Length: 123
Image 1: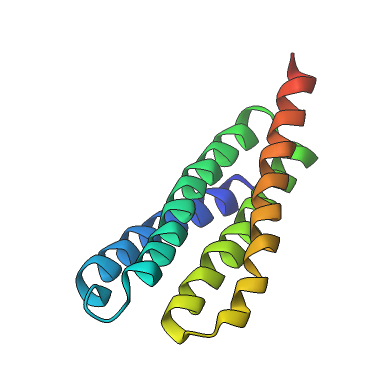
Image 2: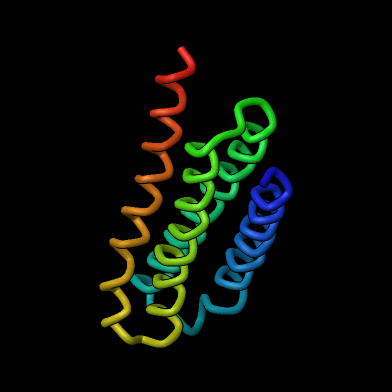
């Protein structure tokens, strides 16, 4: 599982940087200031959780187990749902996509809860 979490971290980090640059240079004149802020929020959360996935990969080396894998899965799904829905919302203008965003946020929170539980049990 270490390899999976590391590859997902790399993909999320790489694509997050690319999407941030795309927004700054390619979308600046096409999106309203509000939509640009929404897009950048998606980028910010994606990059933060790319680092969280890197942490999961490292933890999977030293403390492998169910909670580590659950955290990685929740982070991956959370990035997809949270950031992905924000990207699609801003690029398509379909405001109904906003209904998906909170589910992504809940998945990200669940990932952090799994890491917190793991830390509690390690102490």
